[in-house]
Image 1 (spheres, rainbow, N blue to C red):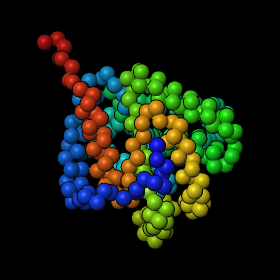
Image 2 (cartoon, rainbow, N blue to C red):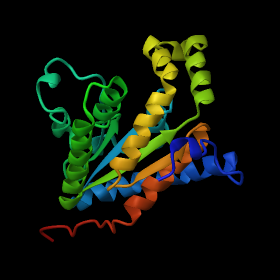
Image 3 (cartoon, helix red, strand yellow):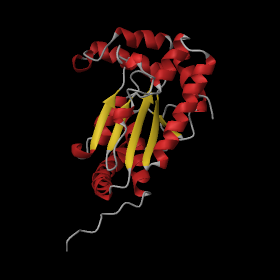
Length: 246
C-alpha cells in the first residue's frame, strides 16, 4: 500500500462541489431506505470505523452522513484514553460490549486502533506486542465477518496544513472553541509520528480493507463516505422478510 504522504488529501480535479452535494442528498434518501430494510432483514450487523488525525472530521462525517438514518437502528461510540478500569483488562475488553447486534449499525468514532497508535508513538510497547495486537485485530475482524457482522473502515485523510487551519478555527470561532484542546496542538507537533503510526496500521491491519478518504474538503469527504456506505449496503442483497400469520 502507498504511504499516506503519497496519497492526495484533495478531491480529484474533476470532482464538483455542487454535484457532490446533490448526490449526498440522494444518498441520504437511499441510506434511510437501506437502513430500514437492513434492520428488517435481520441477517447482518454493520460496524463502521472512523479513524483519522485530530480535526480530520470524524464528528462531522457522522453528523453530515449518518444522521439521515433512524436513531433506533444506529449507535455511535467514541473511544478515548482508557479509564483506570479499562486499563486493568486486555486492550479489546472495552470494545466487546459495543460490537453491533444483528440488524444494528454501530459507528466507532476512533476505535481499538488507538491502542496501536498511541503505544507506537509513545514507545510503550515492544514491536512484538504491537505485532500481536495487529494480528489479533485482523483475527477479530475476520471473526466478525464470519458471523455476519460486516466491517467498513474509513481513514479520513487530511493534510498537515489543513489540520493547522482547523485547530486555529477552534480557537477563533465561538461555536468551535469548546472542541479546542491543548492535546490538539501536541498531536499536531507529532504529525510525522502519527503518520508513521497510521502507515503501520494501514500496512498491517488490512485484511478488511481500508477506505482512504481525501478529507481536506468536507463536501468531498461526506460525499465519498456516503457513496461507499450506500454501495456496500446495496450489494448485501437485503430483503424484507415475509409477513407472518397471513
